[in-house]
Length: 220
Image 1 (cartoon, one colour):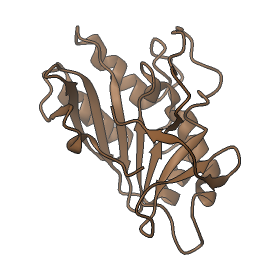
Image 2 (image 1 turned 30 degrees about the vertical axis):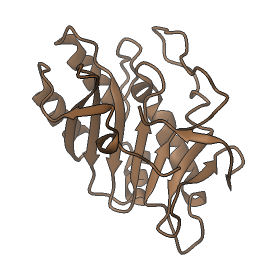
Image 3 (image 1 turned 45 degrees about the vertical axis):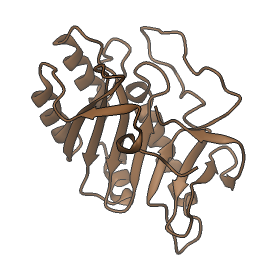
Image 4 (image 1 turned 45 degrees about the horizontal axis):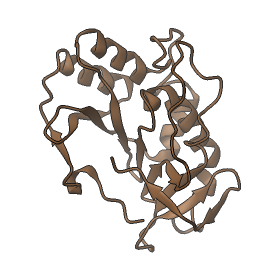
């Protein structure tokens, strides 16, 4: 279960200078929306240009971020829906970037680097990160006290999602309207990394407990 990031995966290449129009504005807007320093790279396979990998370094601990999220001071949603992308600042900025480019814009991975934990979210279907981000953050607020293995240890990374091996496809039918509830894949199992554990520990959101089983990380 040891996570192999994009930088270690030889089948995937990262480009720090994606050839996209409006990318500088996209990055600056994300930094304002999420009070962070942002790094945006393109992810490609077999030498082709591909999806975006976004890293945002936020000057908050997890408890502080959830406090500002609840008060609507961080990552607050927008009333306008952007062509089925979602109603949050990330969805808005991806939609704006798409309007300037002919090639399809997708967010492959979003990493929120906080003072005490890294939150890594992987795409499971087209625009899934933008569409599901609000649901994931709401679940994080609900479960964050249960994510500690003990009172003396909290995870240094949370990886979303971990998927059961028997699941073949998680691609929903595309709709111009947003889903009324989160995709169950995102809110079933998360991978947690602790300093005391060599490999990831699996957290079951439904049971609010830690488990073991045949699960795997999405690395590409």
